[in-house]
Image 1 (cartoon, one colour):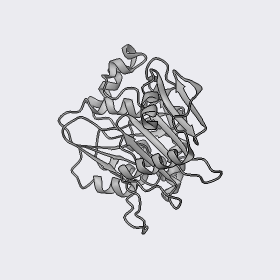
Image 2 (tube, helix red, strand yellow):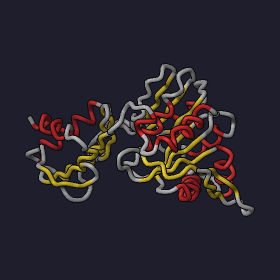
Image 3 (cartoon, one colour):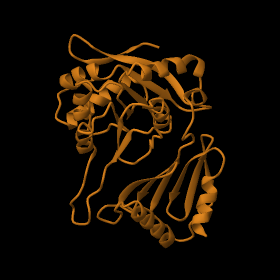
Length: 299
């Protein structure tokens, strides 16, 4: 009964996010506004059981030694969090609004941006999409890649969200360690493995750690048409973000700058969504005389 209540909530028109702060409080983001709603779970035990069972169904570990799990189910992405401080189980659900749409129907301003976006795919440009949470990075990336029908694409993700419908695609997903602490496979390992799968294009769903290092190396060795997303609100924020991630992988700022400048042809920046995906700018990377990575606006 409880799960049917949850399913009913997730069918609300315009709902993009649903968060459960324990079993007492629930909030839905509908058409961009947060509204408090009735929690579909009546007890803390019900919510805990639901979370653990959901994680187990996706072969994800969720217990007090591993209290967080990310799970994708169709168009829904769940983030599950057992109590770390306090006594509430927190469930955050993101509902992707557009799983399969043509670029023209996705964009807020298709007349301006659609020809440019399609040309980036056709010419096999390497690109990185930046934007805040909920701006449509994954949705746009999916729509762009689904224009590629006769090339081999290898995707690397923490949680399977792209789910490309093109025929020659390999979808690699990270794996948590088992109860003995063994068997973990991270994004960095998957990027390395992807290079051995004869890819035409390599796609990292979201760059945020040491996987950036092998990806930059791969893009500098001839894998044209590859892509990634990164959390950054503006195109001019991406260089600092990449340099910071590069430091985690042992790269100096200058090394990251040189690799990124030659790896990515364009940076597609997304703003907050209103009616559709809001492309605010398309830029490229440049190096200053001091080997600092900066952006140059193209469109």
